[in-house]
Length: 410
Image (cartoon, rainbow, N blue to C red; front, side):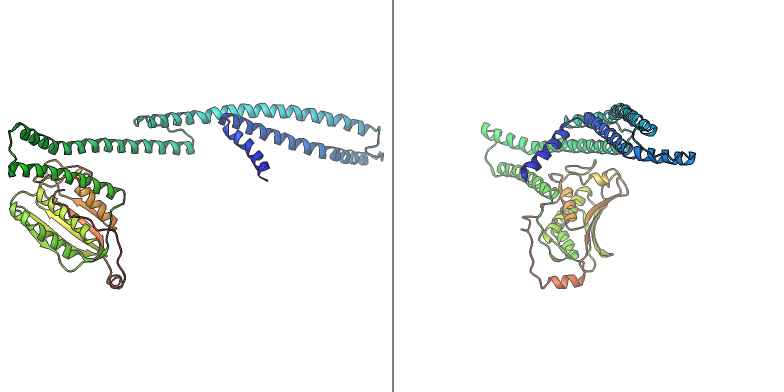
């Protein structure tokens, strides 16, 4: 049974290898041949019968009363002349249909293949890395939709390539500073300019830690954007998490002479990873500290609203321009005018937003404008008391908890 099936598949495979124009021409010829063959069979089967019935009717009307179809009669001779004439007419009709089908196939194929060739050219341009040559949108709705998708793909790839190139440049820039410092210290030690004093070794250690922090942040960013962040979900009070994060960073606020206000409010139960949430809050508080000059105020507040927990970190610092409200979540982006009292890598907000989204929440930024301060709001789903009570009696499973909470400004 396999051989006949294989033999049947071979013509189909060969048919698929033909050009579209040839297949369209063959399709038109097949339609013309089927139509002509159907007409021929109908004519050959029905014409003699209808002819005899018509002649008999005419004879009855004329009162002749002779037999119909008798051998050698005038009706028989007339039928013998009529049928070959019909055959000839059908052959001529088939030839005319084939020519018309071929002409229609050529015209339609050219009309169809011209936009397809343009789309193929556009895809070759995209494959070659030239994303600024949009495909022409043809008039046919189906091809127009395909051309629109190709143009969308080109724009997306162009944006991705731009971000990739910018990422490489930013990583190189971030690495250049500590590497240059390390190179200077090492050369100084070799030339005898520096001595291996505790201060020199401490400076070397700081630059090495900066490189390690950059590597860790890039690794965390990669895991976050690939959806590989490990979460250990437990029942937590987000208001308590916010208070602990603020208390943990309060010495840094005191050193910078920035007031830290805590407005945690009532308990805010949720099912979340406390270590990851502390990482997010530490980043938000650290960035607010960096953006707020001495004498300013940073406020962290929590509240329950429509089944969600909102933790807002507000500051009276340099603020954000409207265009920066979304760009601050991009990798390595630093808003113009931001103060820098930290050697952070600039991916902390990107990782923080990914962590929030893995919890089913999000982080948004708002600001009245430059010099008007900024507000970052972490939104997470609240945990209903009934669900929290059920989980207290269930085994808790999850991924390995994260290693350490990032320092402010990372």
